Image (tube, rainbow, N blue to C red; front, side):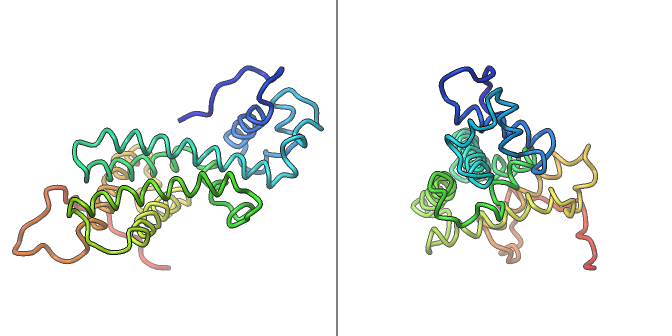
Length: 228
């Protein structure tokens, strides 16, 4: 989901214009390309203009991260609603999360970057990040109420699910997933891996009871690389 398209800044929402410029810089040159001065040039404003809204570089990064979480939540909601069943809704939510991270690697790394993580000085980032987590918690609660997910603390279950998807995105972005180097096959294999991951999350790793297999079981197409 691309950032909102805007004309060069003349008047109005200067803050969002700078955030959009920062996102464009990230996509063009990664984190080293993103500075307050570069964002000002990209937005067509003076070098002093960013300081009306951002105290420093980290403040701008936090705004970019918050914008990313807002867009991520939007695509996750859309995917969940498109599901043909509650479980498929959860799978769709997971697929949307992974697709977003793989499609927008520079933004994704900023969203979870050490420069802004855990800092109380960025309340909007904390709000938007928490809203993505809450979306997953609400999905878990809904499945628990239908008897489709085991009972237990939904926040702990949601954190486990988020950790799994975040780990998968990170492995792909770092080129460590078994299929990450084969770009033509990446989409299909990534989709299969997300399906497998959600299958394990919902049904566990135990062997099939009585020889029965879940209809959504996916056979892995590759072996894990040997431990170095």
